[in-house]
Image (cartoon, rainbow, N blue to C red):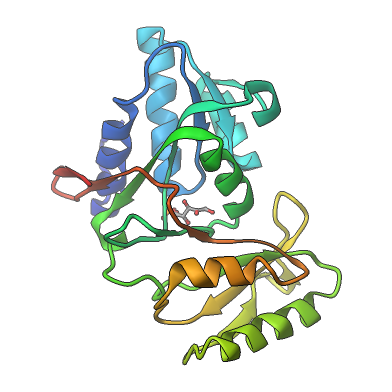
Length: 236
Ligand code: 5RP
Protein backbone atom coordinates (compact mmCIF):
# COMPACT_ATOMS: atom_id res chain seq x y z
CA UNK A 1 0.00 0.00 0.00
CA UNK A 2 2.95 2.35 0.63
CA UNK A 3 4.77 1.76 -2.67
CA UNK A 4 6.08 4.97 -4.22
CA UNK A 5 4.28 7.35 -1.89
CA UNK A 6 5.19 11.02 -2.03
CA UNK A 7 6.67 12.39 1.24
CA UNK A 8 3.35 14.12 1.98
CA UNK A 9 1.35 10.93 1.45
CA UNK A 10 3.85 8.89 3.48
CA UNK A 11 3.28 11.22 6.47
CA UNK A 12 -0.49 10.91 6.12
CA UNK A 13 -0.29 7.15 5.66
CA UNK A 14 1.83 6.47 8.76
CA UNK A 15 -0.47 8.61 10.92
CA UNK A 16 -3.54 6.85 9.53
CA UNK A 17 -2.05 3.40 10.01
CA UNK A 18 -1.08 4.10 13.63
CA UNK A 19 -4.56 5.47 14.41
CA UNK A 20 -6.11 2.29 13.03
CA UNK A 21 -4.39 0.40 15.88
CA UNK A 22 -7.00 1.96 18.19
CA UNK A 23 -9.77 0.13 16.31
CA UNK A 24 -10.91 -3.24 17.64
CA UNK A 25 -13.49 -5.77 16.58
CA UNK A 26 -17.02 -4.80 17.60
CA UNK A 27 -16.40 -1.06 17.43
CA UNK A 28 -18.60 1.52 15.79
CA UNK A 29 -16.22 3.91 14.08
CA UNK A 30 -16.73 7.40 12.67
CA UNK A 31 -14.91 7.73 9.36
CA UNK A 32 -13.57 11.19 8.59
CA UNK A 33 -13.17 12.94 5.27
CA UNK A 34 -10.14 14.18 3.33
CA UNK A 35 -6.92 12.77 1.92
CA UNK A 36 -5.53 11.69 5.33
CA UNK A 37 -8.82 10.12 6.41
CA UNK A 38 -8.95 8.27 3.09
CA UNK A 39 -5.72 6.47 4.07
CA UNK A 40 -7.35 5.49 7.35
CA UNK A 41 -10.40 4.10 5.52
CA UNK A 42 -8.13 2.09 3.20
CA UNK A 43 -6.11 0.76 6.18
CA UNK A 44 -9.28 -0.27 8.02
CA UNK A 45 -10.59 -1.89 4.85
CA UNK A 46 -7.38 -3.89 4.62
CA UNK A 47 -7.82 -5.09 8.22
CA UNK A 48 -11.44 -6.02 7.51
CA UNK A 49 -10.46 -8.05 4.47
CA UNK A 50 -7.23 -9.60 5.76
CA UNK A 51 -7.69 -9.93 9.53
CA UNK A 52 -11.46 -10.33 9.67
CA UNK A 53 -11.82 -7.14 11.75
CA UNK A 54 -15.54 -6.65 12.37
CA UNK A 55 -16.61 -3.02 12.60
CA UNK A 56 -19.33 -0.77 11.36
CA UNK A 57 -18.38 2.62 9.96
CA UNK A 58 -20.31 5.88 10.01
CA UNK A 59 -18.97 8.04 7.17
CA UNK A 60 -18.85 11.83 7.36
CA UNK A 61 -19.41 12.48 3.65
CA UNK A 62 -20.69 10.82 0.51
CA UNK A 63 -17.09 10.46 -0.73
CA UNK A 64 -16.04 8.62 2.43
CA UNK A 65 -19.15 6.43 2.28
CA UNK A 66 -18.27 5.45 -1.27
CA UNK A 67 -14.65 4.64 -0.39
CA UNK A 68 -15.64 2.70 2.75
CA UNK A 69 -18.01 0.50 0.77
CA UNK A 70 -15.37 -0.02 -1.93
CA UNK A 71 -12.82 -1.29 0.60
CA UNK A 72 -15.29 -3.61 2.34
CA UNK A 73 -16.31 -1.68 5.48
CA UNK A 74 -19.94 -2.10 6.52
CA UNK A 75 -21.47 1.37 6.39
CA UNK A 76 -24.36 2.43 8.63
CA UNK A 77 -25.95 5.80 9.33
CA UNK A 78 -25.34 7.66 12.58
CA UNK A 79 -28.97 7.13 13.53
CA UNK A 80 -28.53 3.39 13.12
CA UNK A 81 -25.28 3.37 15.11
CA UNK A 82 -26.61 5.90 17.68
CA UNK A 83 -23.30 6.32 19.52
CA UNK A 84 -19.76 5.59 18.36
CA UNK A 85 -16.71 4.22 20.12
CA UNK A 86 -14.26 6.23 18.11
CA UNK A 87 -13.99 8.71 15.25
CA UNK A 88 -10.79 9.09 13.23
CA UNK A 89 -10.54 12.17 11.05
CA UNK A 90 -8.05 14.59 9.56
CA UNK A 91 -7.76 18.31 10.33
CA UNK A 92 -6.58 21.46 8.63
CA UNK A 93 -4.88 22.77 11.78
CA UNK A 94 -4.49 21.74 15.43
CA UNK A 95 -3.13 23.78 18.32
CA UNK A 96 -1.48 22.78 21.64
CA UNK A 97 -4.92 22.46 23.30
CA UNK A 98 -5.97 20.10 20.46
CA UNK A 99 -8.46 22.67 19.18
CA UNK A 100 -8.94 22.20 15.45
CA UNK A 101 -9.85 23.91 12.24
CA UNK A 102 -11.72 21.51 9.99
CA UNK A 103 -13.79 21.82 6.86
CA UNK A 104 -11.14 22.23 4.19
CA UNK A 105 -12.94 19.38 2.46
CA UNK A 106 -16.35 21.00 3.09
CA UNK A 107 -17.52 18.15 5.34
CA UNK A 108 -17.32 19.94 8.68
CA UNK A 109 -21.01 19.62 9.56
CA UNK A 110 -21.24 15.84 9.43
CA UNK A 111 -17.70 15.61 10.81
CA UNK A 112 -18.62 17.63 13.90
CA UNK A 113 -21.87 15.73 14.49
CA UNK A 114 -20.14 12.36 14.16
CA UNK A 115 -17.11 13.31 16.30
CA UNK A 116 -19.38 14.71 19.01
CA UNK A 117 -21.34 11.46 19.04
CA UNK A 118 -18.17 9.46 19.76
CA UNK A 119 -16.49 8.41 22.99
CA UNK A 120 -13.17 9.44 21.48
CA UNK A 121 -11.97 11.51 18.52
CA UNK A 122 -8.53 10.82 17.11
CA UNK A 123 -7.12 13.29 14.62
CA UNK A 124 -4.57 12.12 12.08
CA UNK A 125 -2.34 14.77 10.56
CA UNK A 126 1.00 15.45 9.00
CA UNK A 127 3.33 17.68 11.00
CA UNK A 128 2.53 20.75 8.87
CA UNK A 129 -0.92 20.92 10.47
CA UNK A 130 0.49 21.76 13.90
CA UNK A 131 0.26 25.47 14.78
CA UNK A 132 0.79 27.58 17.89
CA UNK A 133 -2.34 29.63 17.14
CA UNK A 134 -5.19 28.63 14.84
CA UNK A 135 -6.15 30.79 11.89
CA UNK A 136 -3.56 30.70 9.11
CA UNK A 137 -5.88 28.21 7.42
CA UNK A 138 -9.14 29.94 6.44
CA UNK A 139 -11.95 29.01 8.84
CA UNK A 140 -14.82 27.31 6.99
CA UNK A 141 -18.37 28.19 8.04
CA UNK A 142 -21.34 26.31 6.61
CA UNK A 143 -24.30 28.59 5.82
CA UNK A 144 -27.69 27.94 4.29
CA UNK A 145 -28.06 29.24 0.72
CA UNK A 146 -31.15 31.31 1.56
CA UNK A 147 -29.97 34.86 2.21
CA UNK A 148 -26.33 33.83 2.24
CA UNK A 149 -25.13 37.33 1.40
CA UNK A 150 -26.95 38.69 4.45
CA UNK A 151 -25.44 35.93 6.57
CA UNK A 152 -21.99 36.79 5.19
CA UNK A 153 -22.55 40.48 6.07
CA UNK A 154 -23.60 39.48 9.60
CA UNK A 155 -20.47 37.37 9.95
CA UNK A 156 -18.38 40.37 8.85
CA UNK A 157 -20.14 42.62 11.38
CA UNK A 158 -19.52 40.05 14.08
CA UNK A 159 -15.82 39.98 13.26
CA UNK A 160 -15.72 43.80 13.53
CA UNK A 161 -17.49 43.61 16.91
CA UNK A 162 -14.90 41.09 18.09
CA UNK A 163 -12.07 43.42 16.97
CA UNK A 164 -10.71 40.82 14.57
CA UNK A 165 -8.05 42.55 12.48
CA UNK A 166 -8.06 40.42 9.31
CA UNK A 167 -11.60 39.56 8.33
CA UNK A 168 -11.90 38.80 4.62
CA UNK A 169 -14.84 36.46 4.06
CA UNK A 170 -15.25 34.59 0.76
CA UNK A 171 -17.84 32.22 -0.65
CA UNK A 172 -16.23 28.91 -1.58
CA UNK A 173 -16.68 28.20 -5.27
CA UNK A 174 -16.67 25.08 -7.38
CA UNK A 175 -15.71 26.47 -10.78
CA UNK A 176 -18.10 29.34 -11.46
CA UNK A 177 -20.78 28.15 -9.00
CA UNK A 178 -20.94 28.09 -5.21
CA UNK A 179 -19.68 24.83 -3.77
CA UNK A 180 -22.60 22.79 -2.42
CA UNK A 181 -22.03 20.64 0.67
CA UNK A 182 -23.50 17.18 1.29
CA UNK A 183 -26.24 18.94 3.28
CA UNK A 184 -26.99 21.25 0.31
CA UNK A 185 -25.47 24.30 1.99
CA UNK A 186 -22.72 26.78 1.06
CA UNK A 187 -19.34 27.32 2.71
CA UNK A 188 -17.90 30.75 3.46
CA UNK A 189 -14.21 30.86 4.36
CA UNK A 190 -13.01 33.36 6.97
CA UNK A 191 -9.46 34.52 6.24
CA UNK A 192 -8.47 35.64 9.72
CA UNK A 193 -4.75 34.78 9.83
CA UNK A 194 -4.96 34.44 13.62
CA UNK A 195 -7.81 33.34 15.90
CA UNK A 196 -7.04 34.75 19.35
CA UNK A 197 -10.05 33.24 21.10
CA UNK A 198 -11.34 30.19 19.19
CA UNK A 199 -13.90 29.25 21.86
CA UNK A 200 -15.53 32.67 21.78
CA UNK A 201 -15.50 32.83 17.98
CA UNK A 202 -17.04 29.36 17.66
CA UNK A 203 -19.88 30.28 20.02
CA UNK A 204 -20.58 33.67 18.47
CA UNK A 205 -20.57 32.43 14.87
CA UNK A 206 -23.19 29.80 15.67
CA UNK A 207 -25.53 32.51 17.04
CA UNK A 208 -25.85 34.11 13.59
CA UNK A 209 -29.06 33.14 11.75
CA UNK A 210 -28.13 31.31 8.57
CA UNK A 211 -24.95 29.83 10.03
CA UNK A 212 -25.34 26.08 10.34
CA UNK A 213 -21.96 25.23 11.87
CA UNK A 214 -18.38 26.43 11.94
CA UNK A 215 -15.14 24.53 11.48
CA UNK A 216 -13.71 25.18 14.96
CA UNK A 217 -13.63 21.93 16.94
CA UNK A 218 -13.10 22.82 20.60
CA UNK A 219 -12.90 20.14 23.33
CA UNK A 220 -13.82 17.45 20.81
CA UNK A 221 -10.45 15.98 19.84
CA UNK A 222 -8.81 13.69 22.41
CA UNK A 223 -5.64 12.55 20.62
CA UNK A 224 -3.63 13.74 17.64
CA UNK A 225 -1.49 11.23 15.77
CA UNK A 226 1.16 13.13 13.80
CA UNK A 227 2.85 11.47 10.85
CA UNK A 228 6.22 12.47 9.41
CA UNK A 229 7.49 11.82 5.90
CA UNK A 230 10.42 9.76 7.29
CA UNK A 231 7.92 7.34 8.84
CA UNK A 232 8.08 8.66 12.43
CA UNK A 233 4.82 9.00 14.34
CA UNK A 234 4.13 11.15 17.39
CA UNK A 235 1.05 10.96 19.58
CA UNK A 236 -0.24 14.04 21.46
C1 5RP B 1 -12.73 17.85 5.55
C2 5RP B 1 -11.73 18.05 6.61
C3 5RP B 1 -10.42 17.36 6.44
O1 5RP B 1 -10.24 16.48 7.49
C4 5RP B 1 -9.34 18.39 6.43
O2 5RP B 1 -9.61 19.29 5.38
C5 5RP B 1 -7.97 17.74 6.22
O3 5RP B 1 -7.91 17.19 4.92
P1 5RP B 1 -6.59 16.51 4.37
O4 5RP B 1 -6.38 15.29 5.20
O5 5RP B 1 -6.90 16.22 2.94
O6 5RP B 1 -5.48 17.51 4.54
O7 5RP B 1 -11.92 18.72 7.58
O8 5RP B 1 -13.86 18.66 5.76
